[in-house]
Length: 202
Image 1 (tube, rainbow, N blue to C red):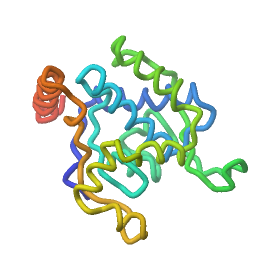
Image 2: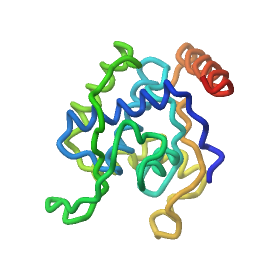
Image 3: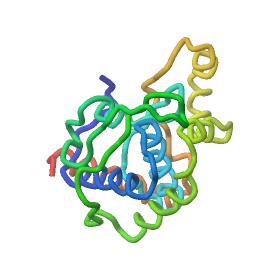
Image 4: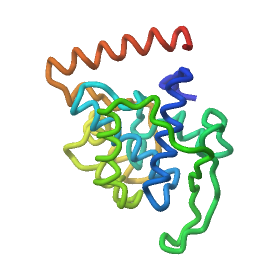
């Protein structure tokens, strides 16, 4: 298990769970892979715009894009961390010609953990990325201008990924590259606060 996995607070789990619920309500089919991509875009866009992450997940550089490993694990089998919020179902999707892990909501959406900025970012991501396939979203994260590509290139991962010799790494996406000095201060303050909260497991 990667050292990039951290213990979540109950508020963080609640927000993550209700984010996934909202996505399933607004998008026809939300598979595990598509959900992982959308979560990444939520954090990237929120950090870029406000200097504050939407969820504050750690994203590793994997072959098919940035992945929050701890969420990947929870969505790969019967959810443990998110068991109160979502279930998963293995279904054959004719349009994809493939069996996928589909995410199903277990309760109604609650916006208790969401600020106005969060709601804006959430709806933006749904409007701009919700209709794209998981493969389309993966291709977007692989463009040469992206944080995924920069980190993969920096760590000599591109060739290994392309040849199929490697499918994951523990290299973290560096969101600070998106930020000017003002937003960097905001981002670092957020990280310090979250570290304190998680240490007390609020």
